[in-house]
Length: 389
Image (cartoon, rainbow, N blue to C red; front, side, top):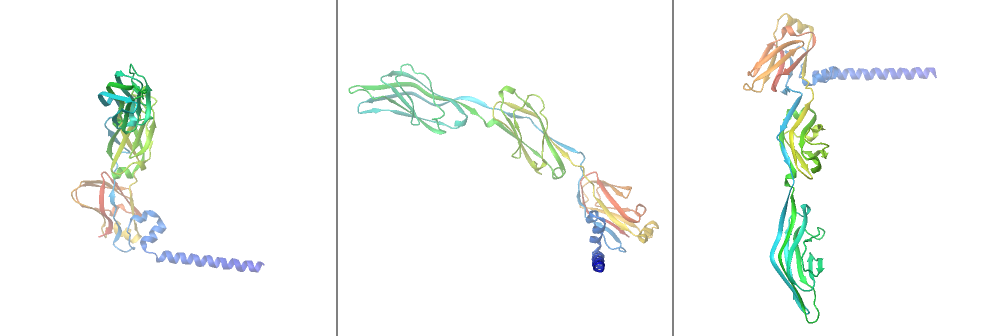
């Protein structure tokens, strides 16, 4: 048994050695760029390094490097008004109606009127006066009987919302059937249908603000602040939407003072136009001091690495060859400003040139060297290179 265990252990050790050898060979055969990334981590992923001994030590294409002056960007929005307005409306007015009924026939009359917004229409009243009448006066609304009695002194008649329709409605006037030899008739004057209609178009108000791509990409969280001016007992629920997503709904506990800041996710914000909408179910609001605050994450400036062996470092220190850092921009029109930190020493860019070159012989060390770009304005860098000339 001991002998078998020793044999098994030997085979396992041999297998481990073979696997290790394969891994070493695999790493050795990798291209320099991939081998550096594997050995030193993701910071090498932004660089295009070449094998030792070549003149070019670093070639990278940074692209757009953003500059964020503040850790918070504030969007100020003008005051918005929310209101509801109720007005008395005459839906129909007729000078007179005459109806009659006898044993074998009769004459009735229909009055058509229209209600455009039944949901926001209340207190619909039929008003009329009786000039003369015999028998019972019968009135129906959309086929539903609402009056059937003798009327001498007419009283306003409320038309139930249950029987009303949005759109066309029909009132029918007729007299009751008489006895064998008589007739019944009514002459009605000053017929009108009135109601209270609430205009809700002012219950919603919106404003648009713009967010740049840079601001959007660095948002950590967003806050909305505002002051609602209102009469607390006369207003209904207040709702706030951003791009159609509700971020607040409720009746304020108080008016004329700032509400607590409403914090919401940057996922509700677009990189372009954004629409902020306030709405209420009742009453009047003035929404003032409206501010949308973007709180930004700290921007981490990119770092670019290159490697110097002892021979290359000696050439740089002895100035046998010039070690040049070259930065090329996309144009020679826009103003450029930045700090270029090579290891711990700082160089400066300040101007409109398309290309800037720096001698960095005295700035380098053996092994890994780091270049950090700290822009003072958003930059568009085409190439960043380090090479011996």
